[in-house]
Image 1 (cartoon, rainbow, N blue to C red):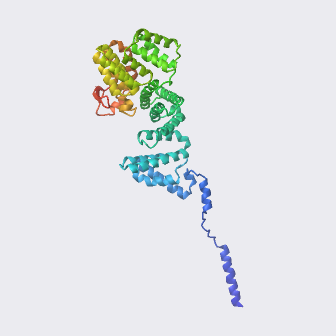
Image 2: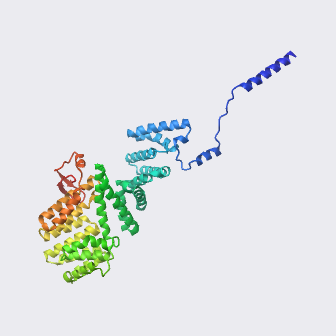
Length: 479
């Protein structure tokens, strides 16, 4: 009895102890269905630190801070594994800053720079492309920045990784979104592609006009209102580049209307009513632009040609007809035959200069244009027109001798201004045009700070402009 009672008391005591003891909670197991639900919160993977657990968030932010310090010290290789962890875990960081994407682009840019393995370089560019794509998803409000940067790099650095049409779409969208706040790095390649794709008939005349008008508006605004001296200098260089391109559209039939050409060129005819080359050229421009046959100014030019310039020479007729039909190489051949056949030095000079102008405006073969202009001067002494043209050739060579902006592109203004100064010295008749060009391009020369930052040159010294120009000139700062 006593034994049963004792056992009963012990059993009751054990049960009481169990009921009063602290409970041990079983670990929570995340099921597969719960994982899927969590993933649905952001199918694009734009995770922020706040969406991570406290422990995980602490680990990731530590990695973030450490890798950023390594990037600041240019130790990209050591930064990479920590950056990769952050990028794969929570690329949107705190939800406001996009440094994880920008830092990834810096890391892969460094990797590309430090390897000669083209296969590896291509893989790095592919990785950068994925970063760009994800950045646009996670930070749509920064779309213009990433499109501008990607377009610029694909245009200049990673050629062949995207088509001209794809790059053009990136840059056009960036410029449209940014408006007057657009970056210099957007406008230069966008301007080039707009002209190239239009010339190749890959975009419509309406699209090309719209983009050109937007570009000109952006450039004009920034040249006028940018206060920072360095940025203003950059926009001034862009202005030079875009003005040269705008003039090239004149050779494209229908791009500018009749009134544009009348406003810009008819006064040139009125100043030189006996110049047959001027008469022919302006008549051709007005006719190609769609001026009505009855237009009084077109009629006046036609009458001037009949009264002063009509010819029966088969080579000259051949050249005239070829130009009217945009057969520029054929026109050059016709005029070259005439130059060889005539014994008249002034006629030789005039048509050599015409050949030079066709190369400048249409074939874009600048070396051949200069050679023809130089031959023209040999046949006609103290003539400034060929020197004016050579100066224009040099001034238009910024994109040929450099990226379009910057020191290498700006130095072409030095020999250009040299030629215009020489032109008005030997031929006072061209002084007004020469002075206009000098005033226009003097502001596009390298700035004082650009010259000062290069220890091997100084104002007043000499400098040889390389590229196709190969002229020694005097170093001057922009005015």
